[in-house]
Amino acid sequence: MNVHVTRGGSDTGLHWFKSSHSGAEGGDCLEVAASPGTVHVRDSKQHTGSTLTLAPDAWATFVAEAARD
Image (cartoon, rainbow, N blue to C red):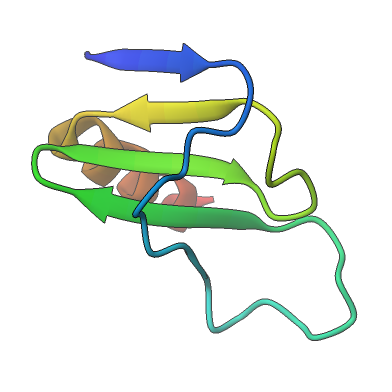
């Protein structure tokens, strides 16, 4: 599995979005941005914090497992 953590926001040119299930009141949410061959994930409240980058197959595995719980 190809996973990488980048410290400090490196979101130049990425289009970040939250799940449609996220409420407007904040809370604990992830934001996701896709680029060719990579899925970027960050805390929606920490735009300049660390970013997790995954290969698309690793992201698909994560989403499938999260949906099972």
